[in-house]
Length: 307
Image (cartoon, rainbow, N blue to C red; front, side, top):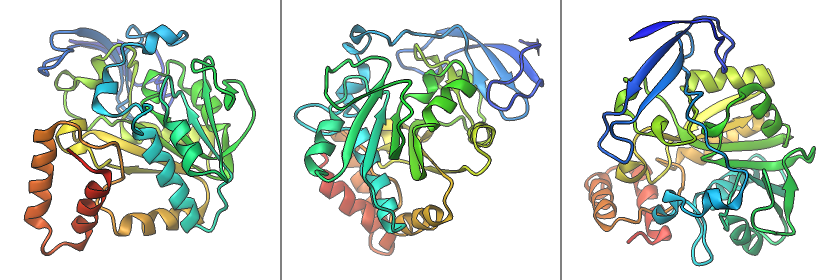
């Protein structure tokens, strides 16, 4: 049941919102969980103000369920932030931009910054978070006014509760000629009850593509937004996962087009489940004979050494 809400939309500031209650019908860890949402009728942003979680201490990350699926970088292998940052650097390289700095925002306990520092010795790689959870020397405080060429926020923006101030702080760390890449799920318009993602604890904000475009324009009218599916979408991450690219430089727009001209999907962490990896390989092999774009995906999978 829905009723009109007096609350303006956090994403686009529209007064046209309603309150609805949804119960997760997806068979996963969130099955049966019920949440109250404020839904914008204009941009389809779904806000669950009661679904908060504190990430102000290291203990909040100790039992991260995503670490088993390869998203979080460890001492033995890189994760998704590593691939997102590499993609951002490659895009800026194509745009003729010198990449001198990379920032991983909200990295938690991920060690991807260490992998990037090792491989990109000429680039300053930093981590920004609520606290210096890893006690590292390349930490940047959350209120820092430093700007970076590549800004990465992996599975972070869905935790935002005050969108205008949170995104203003996040995007204030992006250099004028840089690129920001965020990883999150995008609402495809189906009933939220069929989506497990917005029911995960701490996921207060469930965006549509239009909502993120509206947010970007509210923060900076020059910002452009692009959406790309990561390589591990089939099976492991699901069809709604997207890398969200933001920038304000026309040369970067052209570089993004060039970068994805030969790629079916954006790079990501490897598919760790052997059965899923096999199915993805089989799907690609069916089409690989006649499609040079899909050949590049197969080569990417080989390079990432999927199980």
